[in-house]
Amino acid sequence: MLTRRALLAALAAPAWLASVGARAAASQSSELIGALRWHLTDESDTLLDIAVANDVGILAISAANPGVDPWVPGANRLILLPKLHILPDGPREGILINKAELGLYWFPRGGPVRRHAIGVGRDGYDTPVGETRVVRKQKDPTWYPTPRTRAERPELPPVVPPGPDNPLGRHALYLAWPSYLIHGTNKPYGVGRRVSRGCIRMYPAAIERLYEEVPIGTRVTVVDQQVKAGWHEGELYLEAHPDLGQLEELEENYSFTPRPGEIDEASLALIRRKAGTEIARVDWERVEAELIARRGVPMRITRPLRAEHEPIIEEPGPAPEIPLAPQGLGLPGIY
Picture 1 (cartoon, rainbow, N blue to C red):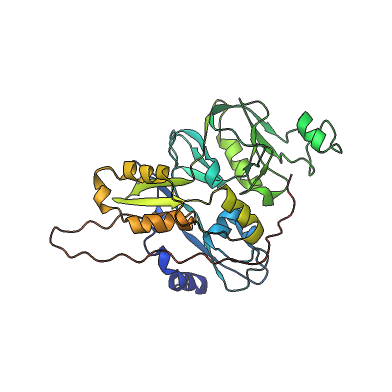
Picture 2: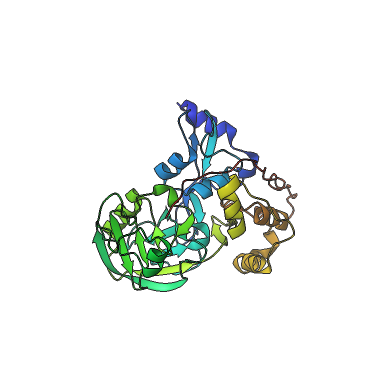
């Protein structure tokens, strides 16, 4: 028997999700991983607590549920958890980080791909793009603030020992890039946002698991792909994430302004390349709608295969316009 929550989730899924695959496992025939999930709120819920509990970034939840107050979403509200994703373009080994989607993919040998939410560098402290490796692992790491950090925050000591005041949390993976780490945090609300000084932050439970599995020498590749496309079960999917300016709007308004007419040629070229010989099946109206909406959720953009004389059945219309919200997000300050 369906529980009340499961029944509500089944009945209340918005129309624009009708074409999204409910579940996908990464394999040779699929470029999607994960599954769409839902959370029915209680009176005490906040989106930030839901994000931490489900290893999802707060801005990703806001993009998928535009206009919902992260502090007071209200009881009995259905929240979409964006846990279904297209794999970024990059090596299918080691750790693959996509800055634009604030996500980390781990490809363990012999095991399924896993994705985690991350926080990355803010303006002026950008996390670099390129390839590096894990050179050291440390439990309960000591933090040595850089001269630049201490110049900006003179109250900091030259050495911060392990403990609740250490921003590295309890686990750290040191990269061959000097001063760049993948680490935990003592401020989980900074995960899923661009607020760090260049390091890659993870929720404490996620980094603890990754720490145990990742060996020294693991390849780490960092890319920056706002738009991704990938195949699953014979259909092409598109996943578009907010750009930097829209992420800033999400911080302030827990919603952002769509930008019709600003679709870049690089995204269209990506879709044409991924579609290949199936280019005639691409629904370009849906492509345009998703490149404007940028919810961060994979949407099918190919029309279903049909017999030569089968009549064409129209697909659902473009996604609804994203509503704007007047109030600010007011997230706590993160260092």
